[in-house]
Image 1 (cartoon, helix red, strand yellow):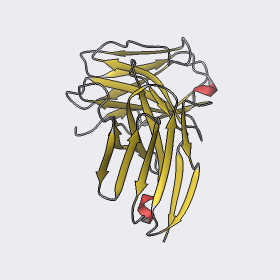
Image 2 (tube, one colour; image 1 turned 135 degrees about the vertical axis):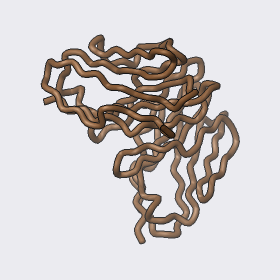
Image 3 (cartoon, one colour; image 1 turned 120 degrees about the vertical axis):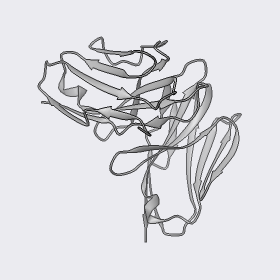
Image 4 (cartoon, one colour; image 1 turned 120 degrees about the horizontal axis):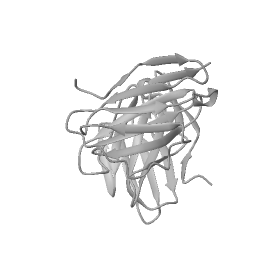
Length: 114
Length: 109
């Protein structure tokens, strides 16, 4: 595809369940970012991958959040034991090398925790 | 104090007016991004700056590294420019991003 894709586009889950969000970056983009935007709030950085490595995981809100990237391509963001405060739009972006170049955003996954 | 401050928070303009949105930051950065988020939620990167000035169509972005300040200008504004404009900085030494709260621009016909 031409752009960054994310799936699912919408996810409704019950409190306490685990969810997995997927991001397919643009082919050849070595950097991949996960962000979160809660309702009516600004964007919040979660984690950054350079290749398959995430040098800094301190942006993840809690230890219920984890992310991985395999093959330098697809990334998954997993939230365990979801809470209502996890409800937000989760956005993925990718950028080509070198670091710091323009980021291309996916459409986001809207997560609702009931 | 937030690391990235934007002003104004909200801006209403008449079609054709010249628009300026300001961004100040307090951390060392390697780059600054201006993003546009339309009402449907999609985000588009408008500019990535590390120095000087960039122009794309009616949009101009400038950055002053010494003063830690950037501006986004829209000339001859149009209702389709109505969106939230977000300033984001890529922190020097890391690759994490810090975001301003956004400026909601409404351009009336």
